Length: 210
Image (cartoon, rainbow, N blue to C red):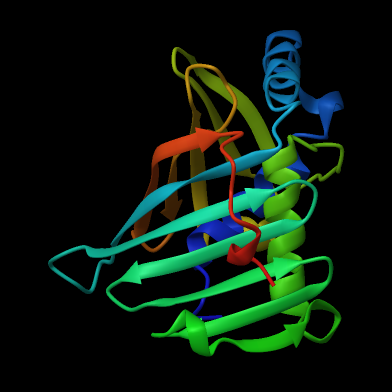
């Protein structure tokens, strides 16, 4: 799906599912992830910019994507790329719109009729809410750094190990949002997503969403 960063899709899926498997965590890891959950409580709105840098083995120079996102609890989400091409989606209460170049000419759609987008949206919302109650046996999770807090996800299933080496997720100092994500693939490709100018509980215009 071109509208949404593939790397970010992987990240939010892993964060929203893997953290729920507390049985595989050490006491320190479990306590740290619980702190993240608690820190994310009380978030009503979230907005900011992102920069995604893709380093592909076949290219000498990295591919850089820039964009922004907006969220209003419980289910309003807007995710859009600004460069190198304007495109995005916005969803609210099961309804959505998507656009290319001109957001004023967005095409409406229903989430139930767009399963790929629905899955992405559900996972992003889980990540934003700190809702890590899902379970998985596909990844080993460990807190790799205390300051800033970073979590490394290492695949343990053959399906994931075939293409993914590891993912490193670094949180903001207050643990209220993801600060950066590094994705390393088996073939040598890598992506880094950095979130900047993140604002929590800022008043957002309802017109940003369907």
